[in-house]
Image (cartoon, rainbow, N blue to C red; front, side):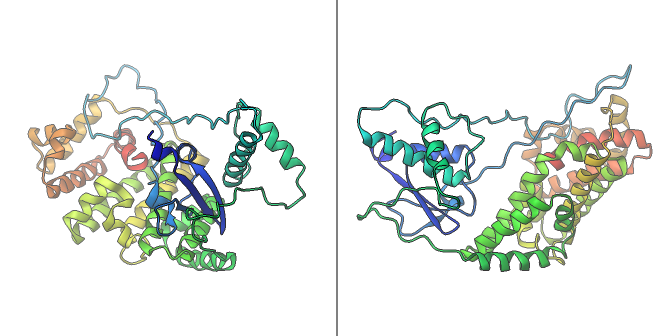
Length: 397
């Protein structure tokens, strides 16, 4: 870290309240642990004004959960070594706990600074009760907070009164947020995906309404609000991917059918829209443009709704599914042959490197063929085993 980076002082505005300063190292630790919210505003010396947190520290999607192991059929051989490539397995991220030094330098200033840092973090994290602090600083903060009067605001650090002082943080009236959330709720009631999510995850749903309404109250562009909502949906879907894959066969068929219908709908708009969805999912620009529209976004809404219906089914009545075996893939190859696929097409589709070199229009058509072939399989057992494998990247990618 350079001396200039070490001197950076960061400030955070959340719900109309200003917190800081934090050093560059402290700020980046705070971000790495996932405590920064998309609705936060960020400022440091050099910024002309407060900036949305995602514009300063881009938010990353959590890695998709690994699918649960399923017992292989007795006496059956394994499936092909290569197939439709799903997302690579990613290690789970266990961030280090924030550590506050307990070594005093003999001066009162260091204790005040440590207390100020912990107070800022606690105020932003919302209590920080789950933290396993490994220093005596926690006891100092707990003693201070326990002595506070009921309703007293957690102390925060005031900005220095000099040229490095940030401009006043834009205030957000809670009445405006509540009104915006209510208006958004009325709109979402007309959208299939959000209706299912509201039914199955009411607390999460209400939280997203408030976050989106806060962004709007901060005069953030509508594109930024839509992207925030799409990313939140993706994160929730990934979190419950295993439950979707534990749904009944009819629910799995609904997901595959809706996915295919959505690809066909996007293809009628443009090849770029179809290819963008395959490569970027719900956050693709072409999808974001229509995602919140009852008319233009009907197909993608139906697909998202089908996935969350599968999640609901898997949560309530999880169904065990066997792994696909070689004979299942033989049947799939026959169905693909009926669509005109040759050996070369199979080699291209089963090799991510080769597939990435194909023109977008061919990739879109091949993915559509792949799902159409699955849905054409007559034997329910074969179809079920193959769908579970094929839908993994759809629900967890």
